[in-house]
Image (tube, rainbow, N blue to C red; front, side):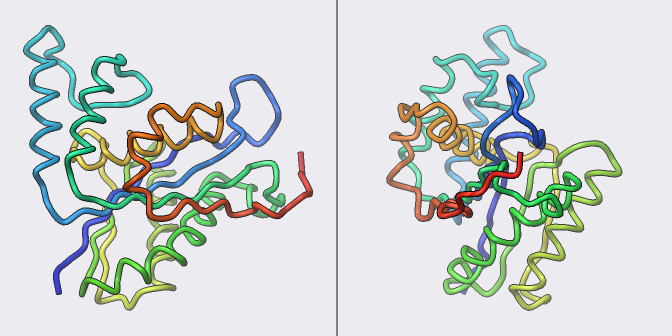
Length: 218
C-alpha cells in the first residue's frame, strides 16, 4: 500500500465578532491525491501567465486570480482524480475557550476534521504526508504546526505520518486546496455555488461541525 499525500488550506478568518468583512464560517479543506499530472498542468498555467506579463507571479490564488484564470484552473481540476474533504465551523457557535487564541481554534478545526477523515484515508495507504499552507508569522506558524502534529498523533500511529508546513507557492497541490476551499467557502458565505458545482463530484465529505447547535456566543 502506498503513501497518501494530503494538502490542506483554510478559508475564513480568525475574527470572532460580528463586523463588516468578518467571515461567518471558518473552513478547513484537504485535497488528497496520488498522481501528479495536475501539478504540471497548474505549473503550465502559471508559466503562461508569467510569459504574458506577470513574471513575478509565483502561484495561483483563487481570491485574487481573474475569472479567466479561475476558469482554466477549474477546467484542469475537472480532468484529474483526487478527493476533497471539508469541515465547516460557524464561528459564533464556538465557546470562548475554543476561540481564545487563533492556534487553539485552528487545532480544534483540525481535530474534528481529521478525526473523521484520517481513518478513511488510512484504509488505503500505509502512511500519509500532510502538507499544509503556512499561516502567520514565525511564532504563530510554529504554534499552528504543533497543533496539527498534536492532532494527527491522537488519531494515527506516529510512524505512519509526517506533517509539513510550506508557503503555498512551493507546491501546486496547495493551490488546488486553496481553490477548493475558496469554492466551498463561497457556497457557505455567499450562497454562490457556481465554482462549487465544478468540484462537487470530488467532494467526499462536507461536515458542518456545529450543525445542530442553536446557541451563538457573540
